[in-house]
Length: 468
Image (cartoon, rainbow, N blue to C red; front, top):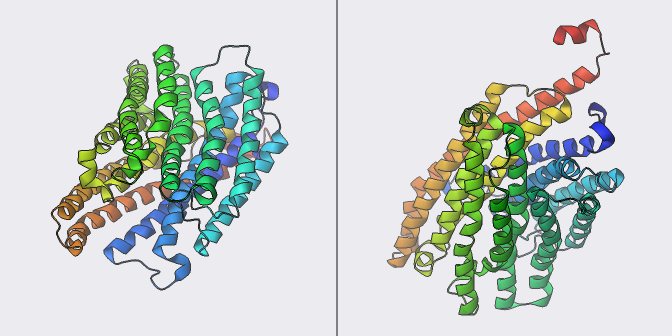
């Protein structure tokens, strides 16, 4: 991959590493969506692998969730950080060789995770299903990545940090701690409700202390670069940062309301979940106020469109979160498809959209080739947007129907029968997203292929001039 990419001026950015992480991330998002679509077929009695234990729905579901969080988003984030941090700090990462070791080791561990989960060796912890034998190795690789990224940030400490660096640095510190906490403590140290309380922190902190700060940093960097205008308010961005650091670690127990976990902890989780709106509104206002300076460019530029829809999804999903954590609403929606819709809207509608924006912006610069098809980019945007909004509305509606039937003490099978039309719509929306991701991977592949063809043509040749 490195042969088609030249390093930037002053050799700051390891373009090869950034490109490698982004390209493999594109492959992973296609696989993750395919696994999710396949899993949804069981609800409408069309699952194609009913009698194959290796591909049973429960195992495919775990592959889907693990691939979204650790394969797709993590690799996309790693690729962006390899570009963004040297640019913001004016210092190289500690070691490019270490970066390549992390790339190969991390993605080998991802493949090993999939193989072992399909083989029936998952860990029995939500969002921490990675087999126990792999957890120590993943932790070590993550720490090595953190070391590589923290080094340029530390070297630049004499200068004021742009807000994106604040967010990234916090995520780099939080992520190894969160991973160790969620994958080891409930399994080996704290049993029962104590372990559940810690597991709930991991479920939410994976999103709030890894995905959210890096995703916000990506948005705060990319938006001013494309618009060529400064971020609306640096002060607001710092308020959002400290609000995230203060509120997010405490809102985890809202996953276990009405459980044996002490009620003071549950109440604290509710208050913190509502309080985190300070973070949401500052980020949303900052992004939209920056965009409002040039709506024409926002509407015509595909990366900015993905950023815009992502920030709208961020606002909706966090308002929804503040509502659904209340005790009265939890009585209805807990364990229903409402929760499934909420999680899809967060990880796909917000952070996947921001990752799409970055890939469409950065990959042509890494490959020194424009995207193969603008039409495919547009279709990817509209299919993904339509699909995720349809899925969100459908699953929220299904959750309300299910929850109210359970509250009325109707036979459980009644809620299953009532859910079938919603599950058909869920699968249809998943097909829309899948087609969008298929166009995405084809577009990226063709762009990569064109870049390879261009580098294989001698400079100044008649073929190259004809292509130009």
